[in-house]
Image (cartoon, one colour):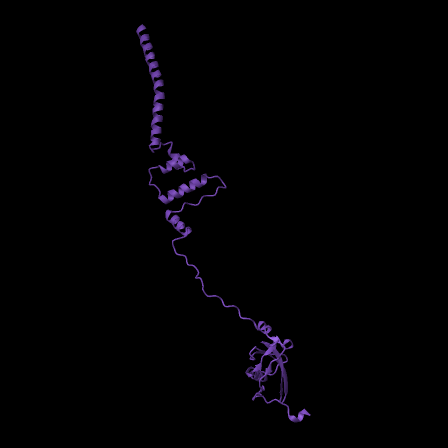
Length: 247
């Protein structure tokens, strides 16, 4: 009996030792399993618990980083840049205006060429004209002021011969026409201008009178013995009435 009791006591001690050893080994096994799990995650080989998290595409930065580093075929560069722009735009606060994309170097050089003027090109200058503008000609009224009127003359112009006005050949009326003409005579006795006053003669009669006085010669008008430009008024009468109507 004593031996049996001793044996059972030894068995109990042996079981107790094994239980204590197992208790010590469990934490070590759990720590080793955790280390292996972390190593698998860092190598891009997720465990069964991590796979549902990778399948659910969220908006956190860590999850996006895992998707980019996944062993699948990388998206085209254009899609990657668009995704990066969308991510950066969503991270900016509200009210912040997005900056325009940077221009390509070729476009920047083109803009620089357009903005900077080319000073090397010769500039055209307006030619300097050596022509001197002629003075403006005096108007008819200004010229008339140079002629002294008859009341201010000390000696009036006198025709050097009879002034004959021929009747127009194409006029057959039997009327009497009277008009006053102003003669502008220069200091040499030449008629330079004729101005008809109202009422005026019929056109054919006025033209005949103009031609006759323009061809006539006058002694010039004088002021204190000096020949000057003068202006005199003459009355012209065209009378084609029958002689019997004069009585």
